[in-house]
Length: 367
Image 1 (cartoon, rainbow, N blue to C red):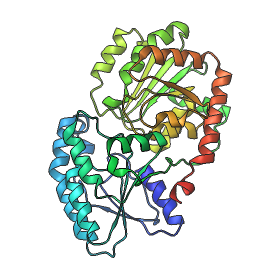
Image 2: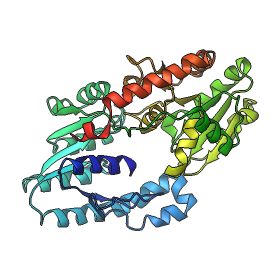
Image 3: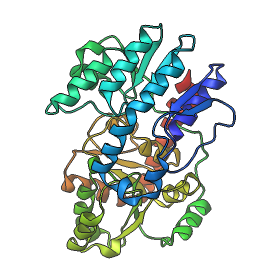
Image 4: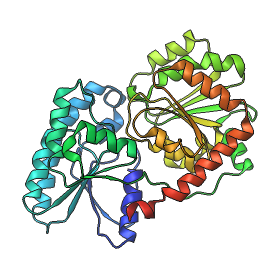
């Protein structure tokens, strides 16, 4: 919702009329302030998911719920847009590409231009059904947007039909002043974190592809060198936390981990980033990451895996470290190197902030 809100505002400021067709936000509603209109055609009963921890955190039940309701949303979208003069349909997410492929073709036959932003990595080569569905949907597009050159190359390799149709548009960022030392101190105080502790942050929805287990596995080696290190894990778990809690106990790092399970409202987000010495994003599969952008908006350096477009946020800007995925030793080595020189770490954060504010502002993304 936050990405969509900022993109829509940027487009509206350029004089583009914007209408959003979506599902109700799962956690926090974002106000359009009259900049664009919103129709919640998909999953109108999403409030059930909000109230049910079981549904939110059980992937199988979520999928059943969505598969059952999604065709209704697609049909409502078709009936609404078939009455309109043809414009641009900019698709941000395709839970069921097979159904979306029919919808896009139907609208294209009426003169609509179809643009798709591929936020995530393409399906793996072993998932043939997912690849077929994605190819069916992508054939209906006039252009595909990705956030980094690495993503562009990967999606064209996976789907050669997109050669010549792929465009690189960076992930947008909000211009923010760098937090002051007093703001960082106040943020730590609000979270109960000691002023002198070295703080690593793992932030956002907790999902299987984000590689949290490798970060926990790396923590004992970091603790050996920096006994005061604290790993803050904050975000809504969309998978069970039991195995991570067992791993934390098995690794003997209970006093070096602070868990904040649950959705973090937007107003509380800055406190977590201002408290952190660095963000660690040990993903095993991803296209790009809004969490990395959030960190760089606050001047926080990052450690990322060499997957998808993540290296593009770091390499060439000297604002963090890139490590091989699924490697706890590589993570611990990079983290120890970073924490060993806090002045250089702060300089990395500044360089990331400058890079983001030079290349990724929302008005430029919208344009």
